[in-house]
Image (tube, rainbow, N blue to C red; front, side, top):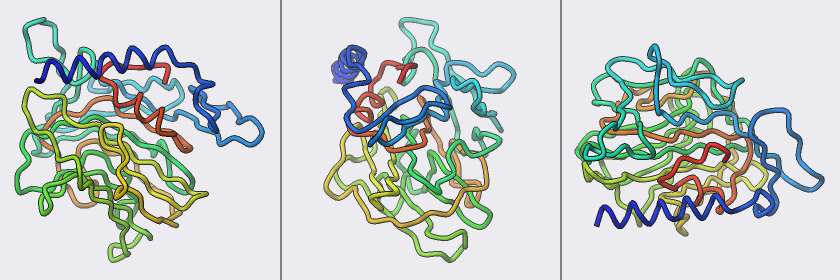
Length: 273
């Protein structure tokens, strides 16, 4: 079952490589900064891509040369599968391992602030879907998180939480993924989680494994800016340390369309995406 699932996603990744950027209607995509959109299009700029294949000196490089790297903290470490009979990494040969006890990785500054359209994504596998809420990605402000992608223990489901103001008591926009339950198979591929904030449409969209369900869209007029770096494996405000594996972390300014989100969910690394 696991091998078939992985093979299907690898095949999807291979097919994705054959697509050209012109196949993304309505989006001008550029790897790196300084590329403008064509007339009538929305600019999509990759601000960060951390493949988590290695972390020399405790720092996982950003494939965007001008983007901040991820610094590993606590006992966070990069697993490398050097044995064909060993435990496979989530994507390609390496991934980030976290034990949920004070481990995380973070950038020095926010790759996307949240005051305009953005896209954040990562693949995550829970070590155990237990009674503890665990954060995969977050963008902190001074008093609360601008955005959190997490496993919610109360519902036992993935959810996205956006605070409407940088206040501890601010109202929140919450999306709970009702259809796809978290995959905590210790030998499985986890789940691909992607959040798109479309500022012009006032929409927050939550994709799980490349799919957007009818219940995964919410009205959101939030526009305040995160003040802290991207957190991988925790909320800098509330803790909620993640126990499990994270891979293929991505951040874009702008709105990634469904085709691109589907490509991101591949089990083959796509550095040109």
